[in-house]
Image: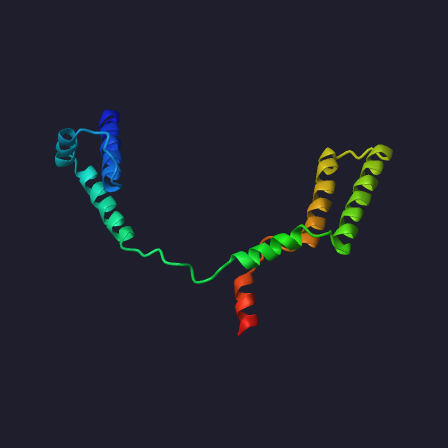
Length: 150
């Protein structure tokens, strides 16, 4: 396809989406029909859009089966509470390690400059991981609450 043909196809497909959504289409009806009649690609794309639109219209949007707000609200409240003793120790330890590392940098000339950035970063990541837990762990508050209620 040429660039002009691609632009025409894009305009016609946008017009088809607008018509499916009940909006006023930007393309003229006769130009639209003429292009669709001569373009297999646009006919297939419009047929797929129409099928998707029909399928989505058939879906019901009833109420959710689970109310997540109580669990989310409880976690927000826990996060804004006073830091625990474990968190205070962790951040105190982080501050002490960073201070010790900076002192060692000033006293000893380390020939590997990459260590100057990687060591404090690694320590900070490990301490945050220790305090916050594994960020890759899958946690489900809803399932826990359902099991407690059973």
